[in-house]
Image 1 (cartoon, rainbow, N blue to C red):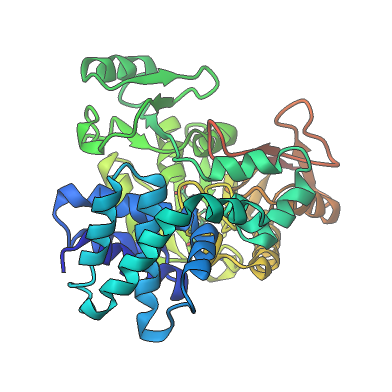
Image 2: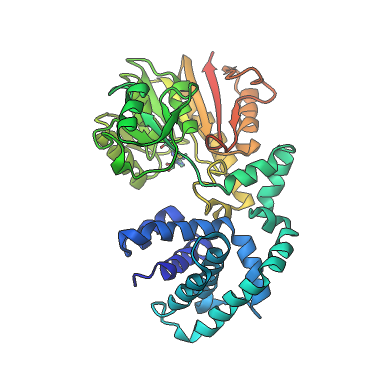
Length: 427
Ligand SMILES: C[S@@+](CC[C@H](N)C(=O)[O-])C[C@H]1O[C@@H](n2cnc3c(N)ncnc32)[C@H](O)[C@@H]1O
């Protein structure tokens, strides 16, 4: 069934109703399509997930009752159709006709008149429907209400900017492998390949591409000259500041972006631990492409007794499991897969990981705590509480305003992803 709109509807059903991640579903749908349609599939899935509450609102007004049960996938097809009419440059008549045609491969030709009528009515009533959606906070910002509330409390000045940033397409950053050449030298190679980009003096290994490109177009990518990694994620390696000969633990390592960066920066002995065996395979793949080596260990960071050999570490990176609310623009499904209750559960696990990993750090050693979250409970509140209960943990400020009351560095989505870092030293 190589129909891009039908596949988009089925993928969205799998994500929103069945709770599967888009990262897992999209490749499965993509491989059923010819390469020329794959970008369109991605655009439609990302788009519907970005604007889901508004699309639900429109359909609530355009349908007598929502499509339920076996007909649920057609509700998602309607979202795909309306998203195209509202946000894509597809001519309106083609958007309607192609969406209606998708009912053939979905084996529901009987639904054609309903889908056609809903899309035509959306066109007719678009202005009023948009105005009524804008009067509802959740539809205006297209985020779940629990998350909007948490952001309003944490960022009384910036919450709207954060929500608006989350709706944008994320930029593509490269990390230059310093073992194979300098950032400036790789920039020259990109110039030669006519790939527009810019450098940023604060991100030593990073290059921001003006437009995303397929990695196959990047000079010497397969040979490991560069990797795709957001600038915020690149800060982990530099903050950890690995030295040659160090014994380092990367305690939540998969898929290994930061493990590889650490090894590009120093000739260190690195243990890459992760709870997920499948994801750990991706660490090995990444290490292989870059011709690097780490000891990959399958285990839980909160239960070191099961895997730790007893040798303490000079440096530890804790890139803990988190809400990923700093990377919503890259993974818009996070908005609908996460629940408010997850935040407390994640914060409890993060605290357990911090407490149980801390004894593995040598006296004088450095621990960098990282999340791709914008929520204080996972970030400065977490570290503040850890410092309060851990006598031999000293907080190392990362910038002028990094203090014991609000420790760490909080990056908000914009030029970089949303990320949090705190640096601790053992006394
Ligand atoms: C934010 S991701 C890590 C990203 C990685 N550091 C990188 O840069 O590519 C968090 C990872 O923690 C892992 N994880 C979840 N619970 C864990 C636990 N209790 N112990 C160790 N790893 C865990 C997840 O499987 C996931 O791969």
